[in-house]
Image (cartoon, rainbow, N blue to C red):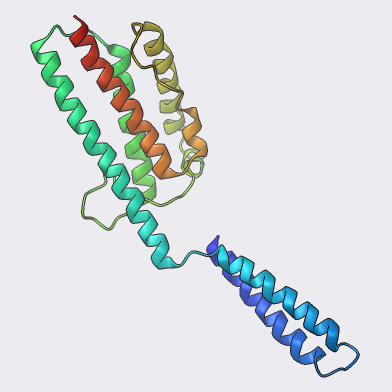
Length: 205
């Protein structure tokens, strides 16, 4: 997008140069030339405001990747706590919850693989996730679409069987229209909720 805007700015500035030096010499068109040139410069400046430098883009990608990694660390700690509680309590069969965790993990790996070429993000690596739309990757991946459909069925079943007072899951269908960092965080949040509910169920017994 920024590349297109940059080309438009160059085109407008070139138009300004041609228009200004051609028309300013003619007394009949001098005023119109000045007015037109001002509008061209104003339009170019507006477009330049929308352009993000490559360095700034890289910084944004790095910040988004770091945010996802922090969310993954929170999920990991929550899962450790839940595993300890289940080990010391009465474990219950939560097939829908387990399926949601697994499907979310598959979808996360799919998105990271499509976006970075690697199936997993690593702290300290400069292999950052971008701001691409998830739909770009799902359009050519029927298997990922099937996993999403399975996740929706599992979420419906999970919410229906969840005791009163525990947090229910939102639909994940909307992640297809989101950017990769937002979609990854949505998937991680779903996993965190399932993990927290798992621990809460043990504590209630």
